[in-house]
Amino acid sequence: MCGIVGYIGKRDATPVLVEGLHRLEYRGYDSAGLAVIARGRLQLTKTAGRVQDLRDKLGDKPGKATVGIGHTRWATHGEPNETNAHPHTDAGHRIAVVHNGIIENAEALRAQLTGEGVRFATETDTECLAHLVARELEASDEATLEEAVVATLRRVEGAYGLAFLDTKNPDQLVVARNGSPLVLGLGESEMFVASDVAALVRYTRQVIYLDDGEVATIKATDYHTTTLAGGAAGNSVKTPTVVDADADDYELGGFSDYMRKEIYEQPDAIRRAVMGRLDERFATAKLGGVNLDARELRNIKRVKFLGCGSAYYAGQMGAALVEELARIPADAEPASEFRYRSPVVDPDTLYVAVSQSGETSDTLMAVQELKRKGGQVMGAVNVVGSAIGRECGHGIFLHAGPEVAVASTKALTNMVVNFALLSLLLGRVRDLSAAHGTRVVNGLRNLPSQVAGILNAEAEIAAIAHRYAEAEHMFFIGRVRGWPVAREGAQKLKEISYVHAEAYQAGELKHGPLALIQHEMPSVVVIPADDLIAKNISTVEQIKARGGPVIAVTSVEIPDGLADATIRVPRAEPELEPILFNIPLQLFAYHAAAKLGRDIDKPRNLAKSVTVE
Image (cartoon, rainbow, N blue to C red; front, side, top):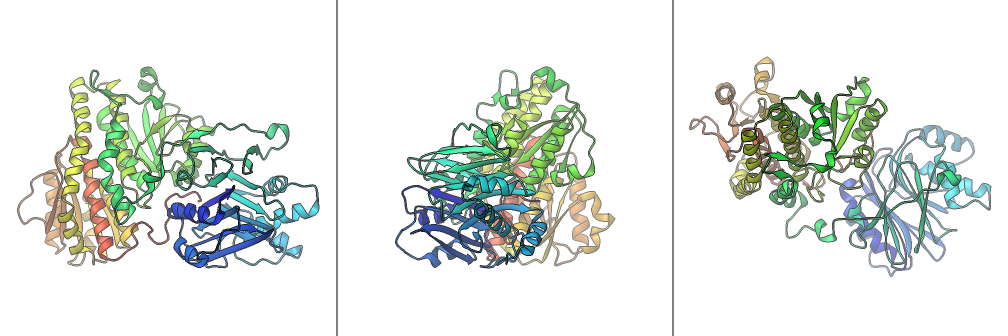
């Protein structure tokens, strides 16, 4: 969850580190800090709060250091205060370390070190790593920093992305990865390290993605990688990758925040997702990354989507698309639950691991569980070189472009668009007719302009959101295609406005939730253009009869006065309508949060990339 950054080269390290932390702040913003080596001594600056607070604390001090590490924190062990902020050091302030992840055996390591006389300054799991590395170096004058780190990590259980700084070896950084992302950036006589390429693209587009179990020693002019196996067997060769992004992709570009910017980028994101993937001649889709031929696709008997949060709800929408277009049984499941329930893994099932970052810990571990059990799994990710993408080896690249806001918008939309492409592909090797295939192809081509039309109605949606923003509780109601849309809509409102919102299937209202309906409880009801319009209107009438305000989100004409407010969505091909219904609910949540004065891009207690359990 946390963001780490490191630099070694000829520049003043501090501005590079602070800029990198600013780019990574979506990963955590409880506290921030950095450590540099200047004149042979470790200089540590930490603060509770945001990266801007750290920048203010540093002021305009002249540059003295050309090597350093930095961290922006999402708290796991210990309160989010200045003391527990990273970097952490050993007692002698020789070693500094920053960490993204959780050390699962930290208590045992701390107890052992305490018994040996070590006095801890913080409540964190990370501090024990600085003490352990320092003790390894003290035990042997000939030990290198890399050897000390490797020896320490062989005693560690858990997930980590780490960067170590040693005042007695100021010409190098040692970094390591296990379960938390870490990327090296290759510059001209300078090197970078970060949790995400977002912190690197201002300086270089040549990157190395570390794999789990790898350790790298970085100097200004070179680097080498090894593994925890050590020795000759541990040497690993890494080939640089060119990142298809630049610094402008991470700029606000005139928008006040990233969420609204990314909402408005959705028409272009959809165009990228379908570009070159629609086969009009055969009324199908082309997804080269799936890497399955027609016979293999026909042998798939079931599809299961695995994801967390919005990715899970996108998977539910994807499962509906697969069943409708390909007539294959399909469902979605939270990846966080999957491996803990001893799942029955069917060799004829295609498992799809869904993650914007490609680093979501729960989803990655579900992939690893599937591979251990012989399951066929592919990734659906938005980051090239991500752990899930590499672990799966094949799948679908979302083409959403960089997404910075914690609340996912364009990545969610592109997930569902890509699942429509997958469903079309599966359907056309089965019984979906060419006529229906052409209908879906045309529907996908129309989506960008339809999304743009919804965005043009932002002012009306904002007015409705402002009208209901003060509600303490809200229902989101949907049926069949509308059900996962309702779940995602409630998720958006909860995470950025802090309004308590629950999603219910329309038919379940009368089995309990209707007891909560009252004047102070608005309900957002999703009404697509399907065979259930009459039933959805009946749901609205049931809510209204009990005094509950209704906000209808619909692509059909409903009776005048039925709803207290109506948000119109353009008609699309029925299977694709959930894609469009998500857009006004994003705007509704955004403007409700704005009305309440929330920090939209950085909602409390959350972070963008969940890399810990």
